[in-house]
Amino acid sequence: MNKVLGIFGLLIFVCLFTTILNDSFVGQGNLYNITRWSALFGILSIGVSFVIITGGIDLSIGSVVGLVACLLPMLVIEHGFSPIAAIAIVMGCSALIGLLHGILITRLDLQPFVVTLCGLLFYRGFSRWLTDDQTLGFGQAYDDGLRLLATGKPASWATMLAIGGVLVFVGGLWKAIWRPRESSGNTFADHISRWGWPVMGVFVAIVGSARFWKGWDTGPGPVILPLGEYQIRGIEVSVAEGAAQLPSTVMVYAASLLFIPAFGLFLGSAIKQNAKRVAFPIIAVVVSLLLLVASIWALVPVFREATPDDTWRVGAVTVSGGALKTGVMLIEFLIVAFAIVAVGWLYQAGRTASVVSKAVSLPMMVFGVLALLGQTDLVATMVPMPMLLLIGLAVTASIFLNRTVYGRYLLALGSNEEAARYSGINTKRMVVLSYVLCSMAAGLGGILFALDINSVQPSGFGNFYELYAIAAAVLGGCSLRGGEGNILGVVIGAAVMRVLYNAINILGISTKLEFAIIGIVILAGVIVDVVVKRMIAKRALVAAESARLASAEPANG
Image (tube, rainbow, N blue to C red; front, side, top):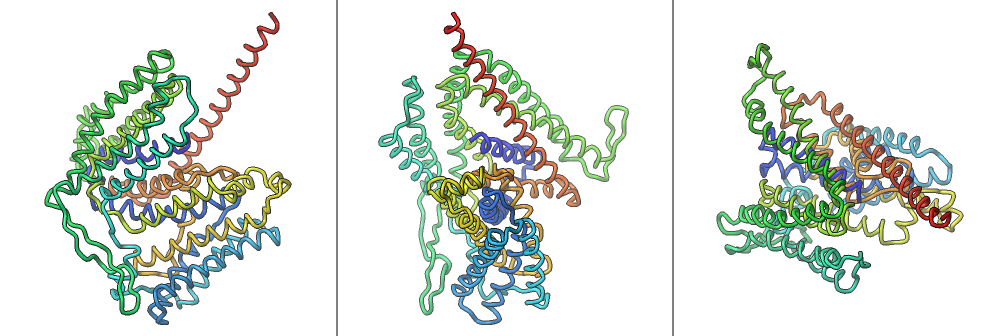
């Protein structure tokens, strides 16, 4: 959970930093593009996470994406296959590629790095030979059919919030009534923990449904799937004028009204139980917020007005507009980073200071994040079809990894392969399964990328995609040593990668520095994760030693 909160904090940091300097970041068009590309890379990241959990690696993901992206238009356009048959064929090819990787690794004891590196080279070369290095695409014939798998906009985020809120309410209610947690010794805290999820679900559902409060009309939507003489169509829902922005308004005011008492309870209970633990975090939060407000008031207007060709006088020094923008960006970067770290410090200190603070921390965080999201155009933005596929895949992968015996086998295999083998787990079969899942996810990603871009160049399509996927998985909590992984963290990690890329473009940073900046952020995230892990281990060791000494004193007395 701490890893997920850490990568979530990094995502908030990048979004907040970029929004402060350029508020076009939270416009509908930009948010749609971010969610669409995050979903596409998130699918690849989920696939590679299974391989990394077992302690392996797959460097062929980008080339598999390129191969599948070439095969699909060839089968549909050049050879006349139906879209369903073509998709089934390329997904079957993806599964066979994963099966081949797994067999070579388990039966011939080859290193995963070598096998998948050879796959990276072979699939790329085979794609170029198969297509004669010619650009492929679907033209406009499938714009209202097959390509809707990647370009469709089936619902708004407000609708998704309404549906998600109902699901959270039902799940939280079921858990509160039939699977209550063990008592923490504090009745009030137990009630908050028990009924927090249903309350949050009701709130989110109300916010999402606000889009339809002024009325709506329905009609036939675009064709989703042609089946011979028949067509499966979606439902087009249109809302009243001005209703699309209503959920944002409700979210801002309602979430703020709920956040304030939740934060007051969180802070008051923490101070009452252990004021010393939260004193310095409170001071850090106050100072950081004052600095943030001052920088927004004094520095951000300068950043927005300056152009690279300007000349500015700062005191007795004359600087170019480009240098001034870079300096302001660095200062704002440090201030926002300080604010995020301070808030995270207070959050963790409060959770450990009081049982009530720990119970109310999750609702408080949810209401705070929703209040911030209400300031953006996200709720009025349409949901890309790949995002729905990602959500379905993420839920399925999470259940598989955490709720099935095979998922536990994968985690056990990554933690200690020899111990897993002696405990009766067929480790070779599980390794093969992980590579098959990874390649199938790459195949699905290749299909969606091809349908979305509609122009496949075999020599470069999918290049470096494996690095984005691996980086997102590692950022999301997957250990390259194996045995650790969290699907939610992986999805957030993929979002961080795309938000970083988008921020570089929006802030006017040279795209030549793209990989350098992403590399620095990833390295910083991994270093922080390792440092925090060591601090937690050291603190646990000290606590265990103190407990041992405390238990030994009465015996000596």
